[in-house]
Length: 572
Image (tube, rainbow, N blue to C red; front, top):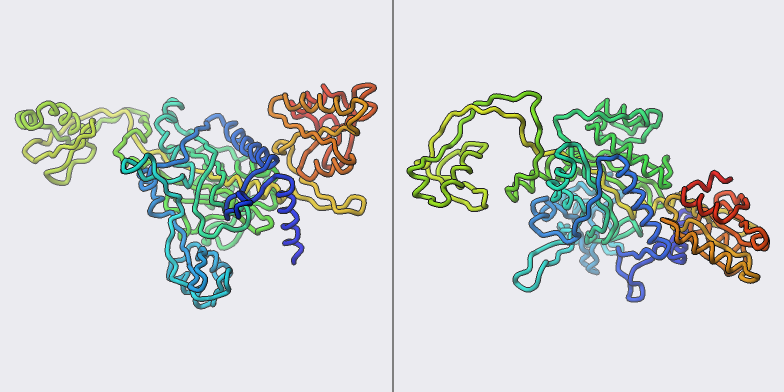
């Protein structure tokens, strides 16, 4: 067993033993791709989520929304997921095992997930790739499998087809009209949403990396494509990002994001800006900056909605793993939903700098025919005719009224008229830049990068060097002994800290003080407080810093104030 694999096994064992991340439903045999977050992991993930939300909310033009996880089929047909959200699956003829075809082809092609069915079948055949389960090499032809979990809304025959959402993005597109009103009809602005996503992975693997139910965090930033963005990249001028651009640039490069945007390596300034802000976030929550790179999608692997896309990849125990996708979606989604529904409220208004006089040809209804033909609807028909943006190519044609009713217009019902109008602006479909974060993958890499193995007293000793801002437990309360009143003092401080806003305390009164320090270090608690005999005399306690073991004495009230303000480090 390699040192790398042995380390991964020790880390995974610790995470299970300490209630961080555990296989779900284990006593019933477990389910691949489903994990529980235990009492430590649940709070750790929540803190990471909150850090993500606070990071983007600080921009001032980004707000949080929350939409359902069950999505009607019509929404996902319009978005392209029903037709496009597929992976190729290969089945073993010998044992019936099913695997993602591109996973089987890894090592035989630099980017197997862009290959066609025929190309994947050829690689499996030509390289005699063995079945991971039984070792056989006889494969059925690869076939596409849609990755969404289907369900129904409602009961019996009246139910509607639906899916568990594969992403949070569509909910934010549905809410565009409300967001546009909230921001007083002014672009740019953004919305964020965190929560569960669901993908029926063919062959989940690599622990937290590929899950069937996962935690995601997405941001949709709506922009006017005709307005040149004015992003300030000066903060990152001295920071060299590791980029792997489109093959036309031939090789990886180190370059700051502002220069990469100016040189059109990153094709849109707002994409470059979000890449820079993503780098800030990842580093702030404990990702080693030397283990971050950005890889641009090739044209053949680009999502159906994207005009440009970069993955933020993080290196860890499983190699380079995509953890964030930053895509320029254009107006694909809003246009698709507008086309599917006829809803014109997905557009934004762009005022002209000066009014424009426009000559137009319009259709006007002939009252002598429209009136008798449509009676009570005649007025609505005339209004609908006047609102037509493009002249029909022929007659008869179907005209949709504001009520949603459709009527047939014959050639003798209308006449063309030339009119002159003054226009003060135009309606347009905003474009969208989307950073999409895999919270579980990021959390795994934070733990992976923070996990340090060392020795103390000649014995193995592990520390999780998590940033204090996302550590699951803020402080461990450790009475030297649970007698002579030390336990009562410790319990009082423990409850005092737990009652403070956004703080969590961990009480441990069993075993030697060295063992208790070790237990706290192992799950990343940044501070530990010891209550001893001196505490009973003058009220002071000892606070110990996780990362170097340095200790000072302090009064409990001063400690609580420092924890609330986040200024504990300044006490040392």
